[in-house]
Length: 133
Image 1 (tube, one colour):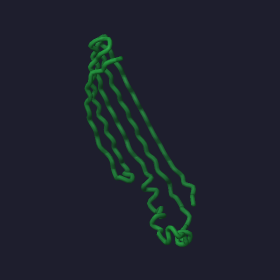
Image 2: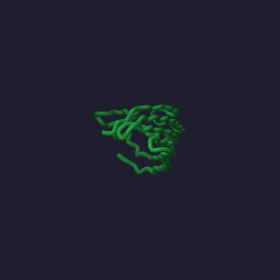
Image 3: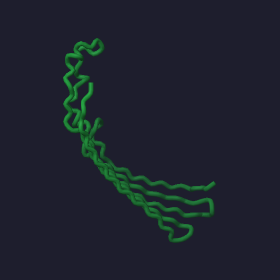
Image 4: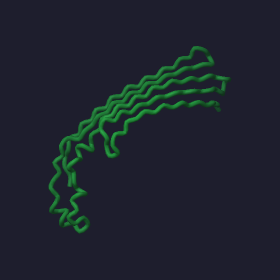
């Protein structure tokens, strides 16, 4: 059993990154990422399989497994993702440097899929010492 369905999908991505070295031992960086996606499946006319399911010995009469009534709603996708980051590195010597980064990310989910609306934001800071082998 199958049917043909029209599916529409739009994806837009933008990504920028910069690096700036004001002195030989210091480096700064920035990043910006933007993603906007929307998709939807258009009306689906599934064939009537009630007679076949009723006669099936494995699924006798259990049509709830084959209910496609809300398929187009579950297939909708509409979200926007933005991430902004700043970084810094200070080189102690030819093989070692201190790094520090801060990032902010925001996801705006306009159409919840199986698990509902999953919007939210995240801010994190990373620091470390990098040793080049």
